[in-house]
Length: 87
Image 1 (cartoon, rainbow, N blue to C red):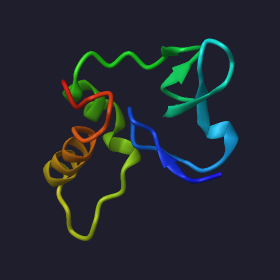
Image 2: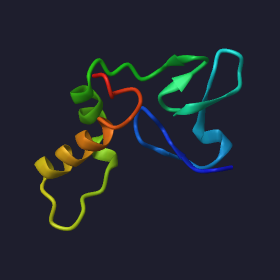
Image 3: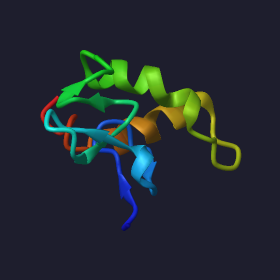
């Protein structure tokens, strides 16, 4: 299985259990098990900023990166994801 990145939270999806599910029960091509189940988002962030706030703690700082720099990096990455491109 090819590794993919969740298009909501950027989590690497490397094994079948990592993928969310569609209404029919098949694996979602775009979203992880933490964000999406049975064809619906289970994580209901209302905005890109709320999504960043809810996920920044899962990201590791790079070098001497400050909290603000980390938040900016996460926001830049999330803004490229399918769920947040139009946010």
